[in-house]
Image 1 (cartoon, one colour):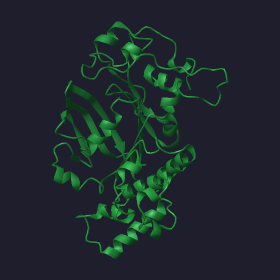
Image 2: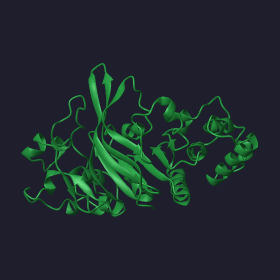
Image 3: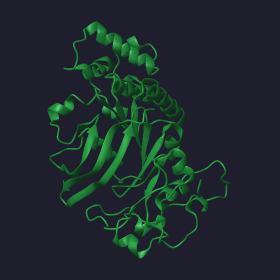
Image 4: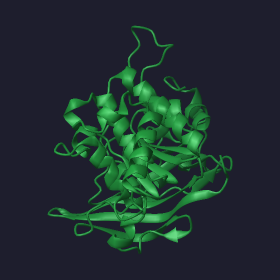
Length: 340
C-alpha cells in the first residue's frame, strides 16, 4: 500500500433542499484514501456515510442537493467544479461504484454482457472482440463460472451472490484507481457475504485498487478494512486503523457501536447494550458535539462547542472533549463493559 493519497476530501459540507427545510447531511468532513488502501466508513443509518460517498462521484441530485463548501480531489484534480459531462469520464473508468442491491442496480431488461460493455461506451477504441475478451477475463477474476453463458443471461437468472459479483466486475472493468462499495453485502446471506468480502479484498490488493466500503456492520470492517472512519450526525467523530478503533477507541460513540454487537466471549445470559436516544435533527444540527445528548459522559461544553481534534497517532484521531487535557478524568473507555 502506497502512502500517496489518491483521494483527498477537505471540509466538505453537502445539504439537501426539502419541503421541511434544508437538511445538512454532510458537515465539514475531511479524510484521505491512499493508493491500494481499504477504508471503511461506519455509522448508524442517517449518519451521512452514503451521502459522503456519493459526493465523490457527484451522484447526489444537484437540483435538490448542493455543496456548501469544501474540496474533493482525485489524483490532484478537483471534483466539485467538474461538469456532468466531465464526470462521465471519471465514473466507471477512474472511480467504480458497487451499489447496495444488485437486483435493483442492474437493468432487468438487459443481458449481463451488454450491461458490462456499457462501461466502455465512448471511452475506448477497443474492437468488439477485444471488449469481449476483457469482459470474459474480469468475469473469471470475480469467480463467475461459465462466463460465456452468463453474458447472455438476465439479472433475474442469477443468484444474489452472482449478481453482486457482476456488480464488482462492472466496477473493475474500467481499471479504476478507486472503488466505492455502498453496503455491498447487505442483501446476502452470511456464507455468500464472506465469499464476496474475501473476493473484494483479494482483487483490490492484487490490482492495487483503493476501496471505500460504506457499512453499518463492524464485522465487515474487521474482515477487510485497513482503516476506519466513524461518522455520526453528518460528521467524522473518530478515525484510525482497525486495531485502533476496536482496541484503543477514543470516542463514546465508537464504544457504543462496539457494545451493541455480539461477541464470541459473551455468555447466553449477557445482554447487548444499545445506545439510548435518537440521532440529531439535521434540519437544525446541534452547535456542539452531535453525540452529546446521547453520551453518558457529556459535559456542558459538549452542548455548546464542537470538540477540537485530538491526535493519538498519525493515523488515529478523534473529536471528543473527554480527550482534552482539562477534561475531568473518567474511566478508560476501552475498559468499560461491553468494550473490545
